[in-house]
Length: 225
Image (cartoon, rainbow, N blue to C red; front, side, top):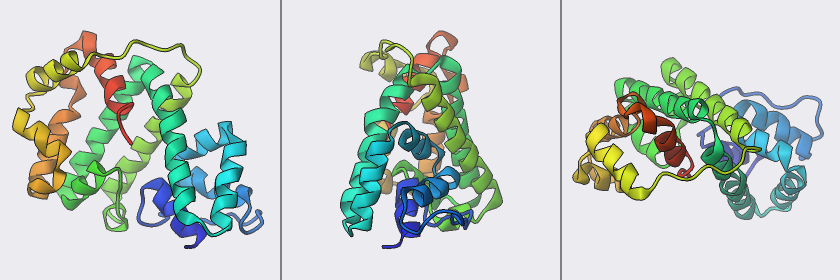
């Protein structure tokens, strides 16, 4: 696996849309990795920047040929540092992530419905990103994730929305049925365009009663990955 392939997996992208490779960094160096992550996965780049020792270890693992372990370690860093930061993000930052995710789903529904299945698995393909509207929406979504991480990483913990309250919001405010909730857990069980519609409902943060929007958004984005 090449560095480009490794970054593609870390970014949840089928290829490096920018095509940019660091010109001033030694091949295989952590500097090369960081330069490329800056344009392909702003969230992971921010996490690696804050925890460079772990980033260096991951790069060394990859360079030693253990690509699978490196990918698992990168994913673990997002869960370790990203999700807690998301759970402490401000209402505005968390809500913006869901809004941008909804924009991605809307673009995929219109131009590449299969991408909704990919997105449900925290992935997006080169075919999807070759569509300008999808690419723009996805980049804005990635940047919203980065900003939510930066916003929440140094904040004090915020009580998490209770499961029962989340269920009430999803079923009453967002009008997602029990059957549709099951579909979200098994995205391949329905046609892609139908899945797009269900995910779109789940991300429709503007339909959530205002006092609970921030809570719901934080709980939703910190449950990802």
